[in-house]
Image 1 (cartoon, rainbow, N blue to C red):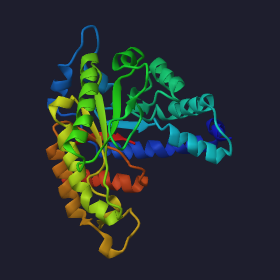
Image 2: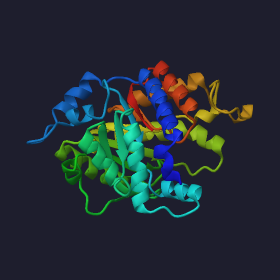
Image 3: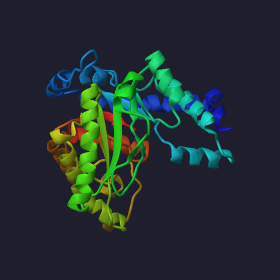
Image 4: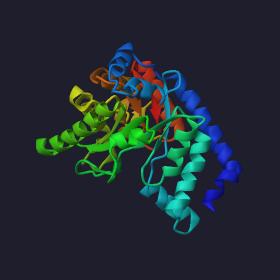
Length: 320
């Protein structure tokens, strides 16, 4: 049974590996800027904590080293396939609680969902082992804004102990202006909710590309990610942190040590190009950035983070 992980050596190895990864990532992460502290500290709601105070609860020494455990449908499918049967909501709740007990002590914050993580969320609120970031979307759509979980609001999640809100949106810079504005207005609404409630708003943007060929996607990646970064860091959205992809596909960067080698003619950029795009992404953003892993190997992820640091890309940490 998959849920036997809590009594197996596998859990200890998982915790050990995650601890090593977080320590390594933390060394190349940047601290909060003075401007960010002043901005968030001023957003204090009546009778509550400021955004900055809540943000600090999601950090260790000013660095975000957060673990994402908000997978829902994809997690259930993998558990069902590995276990050879259908796992119940109760079992998945327990599975996430087990992971939270182990990884909460190693992370500055845990990102949890509203479908399979009520036990895990309660554990963090009760034991205060780390910060609690809650995924606000019920599902994601690649054609427009996501649906929100019925019956919840940012204020309710704050009252239940959340320290920050995360929203995932897909975005295609090739969409029509009307389609893009639909997403813009949706994000703006959630950002206003977070500002009113005094909770930091972590906005995750995944860029879309209609190209089929991966080499073409690699060439298009910088424009898509940097364009989305510039757009959603605008003040109208009230985003406090952008959770973004790297502006290059690591697999197509010539000169990196970690990714598997590909045919020479398929590389889209070299290390110098990657650094240029990382720095440009940082310069185009009006709010801090954290990087998502996008499912790449941890060695590749760490190498890309180190490259971002060398490039002078200012970011606050990771959420992976």
